[in-house]
Amino acid sequence: METIKEGDFILIRFKEKRYLKRVESDKNFSYKGGVLYYKDLIGKPFGISVGGLQIFKPTLEEIILYGIKRETQIIYPKDTFFIAKKLNLSEGKVLLEFGTGSGAATMVFSSAVGERGRVYTFEREERIFQTAKSNLEKFGFSQNVVIFNKTFNPAEVEGIKFDAAFIDVREPYPYVPQVWELLKPSAPIGFLLPTTNQVQELLKHLNPYFGDIEIVEILTRYYKANPERFRPEDTMIAHTAYLLFAKKLSM
Image (cartoon, rainbow, N blue to C red; front, side, top):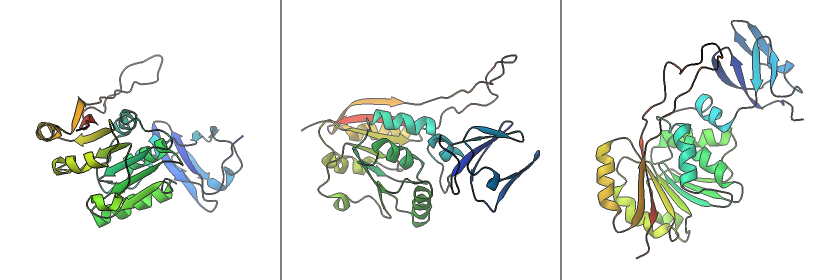
C-alpha cells in the first residue's frame, strides 16, 4: 500500500473546495474546521478522511488546475489531454512544441511520451520560461523535457525527426514549412488558436504541406453529485480555443 511521505503532494478536499499542498512535517493547513498537521499524515494511506477533510493523491489534471504557477493563461486539461491523444503520443514518441507557456500542456505531453520519449519545447519570454522550467522541475516532469529559452529555431533540433508537433503561438503561419521538414511522414501536427481569424489564416498556409485537417472545440459540463438535486453545475468550461489538427503530406 502506498503511503504519504515527506515531500509528497496531496489534494485536500474540503466541502466543494480543493487544495493542492506539499507535505512538510513542520507545516500545517488551516481551514474553517480546524488545523491539519502534515506530520500526522506521514505513513498514512492516500484516500483517508481527517477532520472533515479528504486526502487524495493528486492526478495530473489536479496538479495543473491547483498546483502550477501561472504566468500565462494555461491550456485547460480538457484540451491538453485531447490534444495528446490526437497527436497519437505514447511511450517513446518525440514531440516538438512551441511556445511552452507555463508548462501545463508540456506536463501532459511529458507524461504521454514516458521515460523513453522526449519533448523539445521552445519559449522565448525569459520570465515565462523560468516559470515553466520551475513547474516542470517541481512536479517531476523535467527528465524527458528539453526546454529552450528562445524563439523556435530548427537548428536547435537538427537531425531529429519528430513523431508529432504542437504549436501555440500568436502567428504560427511562417513556421508551417519549417515544421513540415522536421516531421516524420504522415506525422500529426496540432495548433491552438484563440480566434476564428487565426484559424482562417492558418488554413491558407497548410496547403500543400498538410492534409486530413480537422478543427474542433471542446465544451465540458460538470454535474452536481447530489442524488436528490442532480443537475448541471451553475457554470461550465465552454469555449477556450479552437484546436486544429492535420497530418504531414509527402511531396
